[in-house]
Amino acid sequence: MNTVFYPIHLILTRRNNQYFLIYLILFLITPVFAEFRLPDEIHELASSAIENIYINDLKKAEEEAKEIIKKFPESPAGYFFYAVILDFWMIHYQSNEKENEFYRYCDLAIEKSEKILQKNPSDEWAIFFMGGADGYKGTYEARYERWITAFRYGWKGVSVLLELQEKDTKITDIYYGIGSYNYWRSAMMKTLWFMPSINDKRQEGIRMLYEAQKKGVYTKITASVALIDILINEKQYAQALQISQQRLSEYPDALIFKWGQARSLFGQNRFDKALEVYKTILNKVESDPQNNHYNAAICHLEMAKIYQKLADHEKAILECNRMKYYNFDSDVEKRLDKYFNEAKSIARDAMQAQIKQKKE
Image (cartoon, rainbow, N blue to C red; front, top):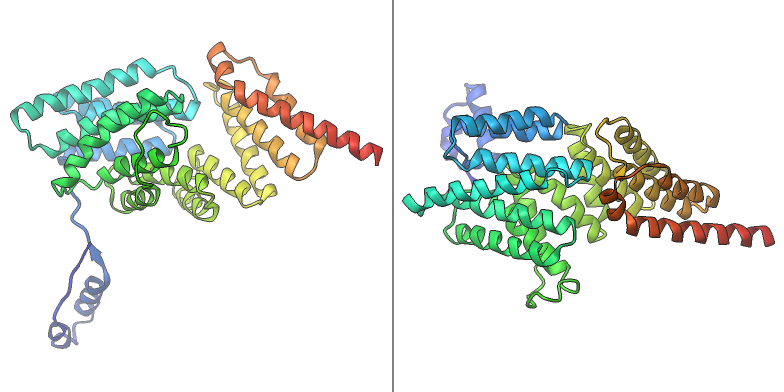
């Protein structure tokens, strides 16, 4: 970060010019960043697509990514951003319906990057998209707890981004991929028995994600999503809530930040507030025509946990039972299996508590 300094005599000699003085003072105190971005037309379409993701206009976001592909078919950018949008769609609906298409566009982004690098090995954006595409594959695999492939893709992607970091690249979006990898690899070392041991890089990962949130051109908002999950995992609920609410002030309909808000409030034992947010999410997902009931089931489970904390055993049992009211397809039902088991445990504990209360 570079701050611009001006000699004091420039201000003193122009006292009669009020606007000039204000202009100079603003520059004295304002950090100036040189934003390194893609060519203008790609940048505008990509930035608009990202914005449309978080205002829930995924159709428009897809159209803009496809427009990049149409106008710049040899650039990896359009394929990469289209893969990002597909990944977000699958997160939003908790579905793997677009998995094959997602992998195809990740591979196309890598293929286009490799062609560019054969002619120009120093093209930093081509390197970035190649590493980023593998990184997104890794995060997708991790969502389904396929840890070996998750970290194989993750390491492949982050290795490429680390090469950019060593070159002192101006692409600030590398902080998102490197930061996410550093944190989760360290945080999950007990689970990832097959990985060689490393130093704990959780705090370094968090620091880099804050850098991406501050300086990233295309990963600024995504870094917020990552930070919320990580800060909740670290039990830093106040910080996670702050980011969630800041982003909700910008994107009030973004359910991904509503989830973060609800989980943070629960972590702070603000159960009534958390319950309100979960009810809002439930209403949203149940009114969505593409709802596959996964998110609805999770809402009922989280509300059951809240009622359990509030010692409202009857409502805790009711929410657990409501998870069974939906007709799930086989894939969704399989993914919810551990949550159904958790609901059974909550309902059993609640019934035992009710029996104990009656005896007393």
